[in-house]
Length: 509
Ligand SMILES: *[C@@H]1O[C@H](CO)[C@@H](O)[C@H](O)[C@H]1NC(C)=O
Ligand SMILES: *[C@@H]1O[C@H](CO)[C@@H](O)[C@H](O)[C@H]1NC(C)=O
Ligand SMILES: *[C@@H]1O[C@H](CO)[C@@H](O)[C@H](O)[C@H]1NC(C)=O
Ligand SMILES: *[C@@H]1O[C@H](CO)[C@@H](O)[C@H](O)[C@H]1NC(C)=O
Ligand SMILES: *[C@@H]1O[C@H](CO)[C@@H](O)[C@H](O)[C@H]1NC(C)=O
Image: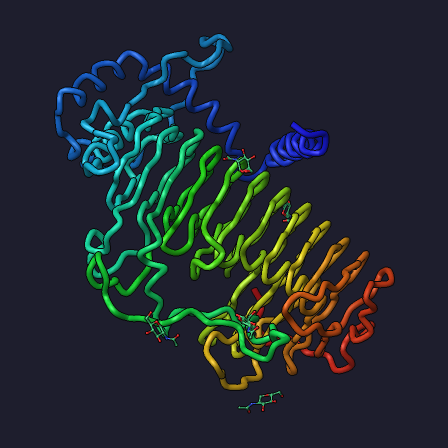
């Protein structure tokens, strides 16, 4: 461990402790997990071996778990009777091999995973084992939680691989692996989740979104940047379904942790959290080729209280994408690249209202990415983005390190509209390194200018690669230059816009 990574590790622990101890009023994942797993696993420890045996012998009683009418009632720990001993050493464990999984990379092991889940679901704090060096071929699968106990652990040390044909996905699915309505789920281990994405990347559609910022990047030799070749023709796996699946998606869950694993080669986004509260992702990697289309690393939507750190993200689209409904997001110690950078948005598509607040992104290294830190909104949206901090972002050979684009449009033209998602309180500090196209691009809405945009410690140097290099650009961007920027960002307008742009009631978040 290098000196600096040890320091950041120590810092991460300190921050984790701070965040944890200050979380008195809302979900305190660890505290609750400990309390419950101790009390409940004690009371279940006698039953678990019989459970396991039952399933080991091929018993199928999935209906049992799903026939529960009431959600699991919380068990109150008996006071003082239980000494503060460590939790029982033998937690209930369910190895997928015991449920008939072959792990040879070609036999369909979906049923075995479903069996292991049905068993683990019944026991608080139970553990599903996905052992190495096995490679488990698993179809589209759902780990559904509304009637499951809390704090289940997926110990993934082996490899889980997706089918490499389209037919398993029928006419289309949002994801390959879904975790839904769970409390306290953890995925841990040192294993790999492989989405077998290459067949999906080959076939792009005209309707697939293109990154709008491509338009800002003009090669010196005059030819336009290569856009992916559209071929709608079917290939080996049959006709491609209408939706490309996300590799792992969490929906409607509380206190979720993903650590230790790598997700690679997703057909589309790698890891998505939708409508979750209390998310922790660390010591985690995403790996896909730079030219794999629309392969976001981590995608957050309608989620709160999210911590992402100590993570390497290489992919073909945004390393992290923060969508509407997100607040209290803290992202630090990330390596991003290749990829399109870290983005808030796109927001406000099809005249929708978007609300994003309290986002911190710090201590990030970006290499060879299209954008650095970016906020992108569509014309015609409403709502707001406020309280954003981008701090200590080190860029190297990044095309567009700092971007606000309120005219986002993934087609060739979009119609001009006056309403916009309002942007305010956007802070950039210590954004340093090299760029290959334009250091700063602020394109704010005519009717709803960006306000309180603060720049502090911007130091960006051009590297002539294959592109035209441009000066900083600003349009309707107001705020403050806290320290001189390199290069100078003279286009930033100091103070507030003269006419007050009062948000209509329906725009307030
Ligand atoms: C021009 O630049 C593009 C993009 O970098 C590249 O693909 C193409 O081969 C170049 N063409 C020539 C004639 O150099
Ligand atoms: C796209 O690829 C097909 C087959 O690989 C090729 O025939 C076609 O000319 C390509 N189209 C473009 C626009 O490059
Ligand atoms: C992520 O990748 C980095 C660099 O290759 C490596 O040092 C680290 O161990 C990886 N982490 C995981 C969880 O695989
Ligand atoms: C902002 O988010 C952080 C987590 O990143 C949280 O600790 C803090 O309490 C939040 N602030 C507000 C005002 O909600
Ligand atoms: C939209 O607005 C831009 C900037 O004001 C202008 O250049 C463009 O012509 C407008 N487009 C349409 C379709 O009105």
